[in-house]
Amino acid sequence: MSDVILSIKDLKVSYGGIEAVKGISFDVKQGEIVTLIGANGAGKSSTLRAIAGLVKPSGGSISFEGTDITAADPTETVKRGITLVPEGRRIFADLTVLENLKIGAYLRNDDLKDDIEWVYSLFPRLKERSWQPGGTLSGGEQQMLAVARALMSRPKLIMMDEPSLGLAPIIVRGIFDIIREIHRQGVTILLIEQNANMALQTADTGYVLETGRIGLSGTGAELLSNEDVKKAYLGS
Image (tube, rainbow, N blue to C red; front, side):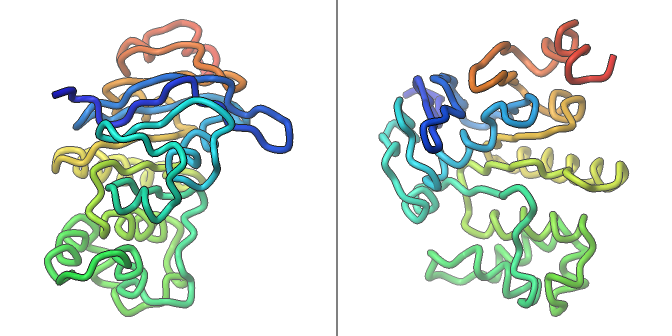
């Protein structure tokens, strides 16, 4: 049996005739952390949105655990074990932390107690703020809540779109510690991140997207040491 959990083949995504993703192919193996890096507009978010069923590809295919999900809607992708932590967090500001977590498990009909305790063990600050409205949390705490909410569906693959965006460096380090801990607990991760240095230090495999195409690929360590990547994305 293949250890590839997600396979993208010649994926294309268009918006009103403008092609944002221009035929990319890559695989994500079970238990990997894979990162997509690149400038704004390179097609990273469009790729995740297509995998999540939020936009329909204009070409190519997406398969998950050997099943074609190219035409799947968001509910079906969650049922299959894929969740997306969107850019900008998008928590429910008027609902409590606990209510936000329960919404993450909306497709489940079993007891949530153990999973709530599990995400509270990952994010102790959320437990302290369990009854606070999400909108009263700090930016870092809201990002923690967005990740915790996604974990409540028990995903096999969690996709994160810019989890460190707008956060202070010390909070960013904490978010990446959590990403590594989630990975240690067996969840496969597909990560988009502007902080290319942190992303490549964390990832097993990385892909550099340039105007809708994959320009470079390699292990995280290989891309960190690549001179073109250093100049373009690492500020050196």
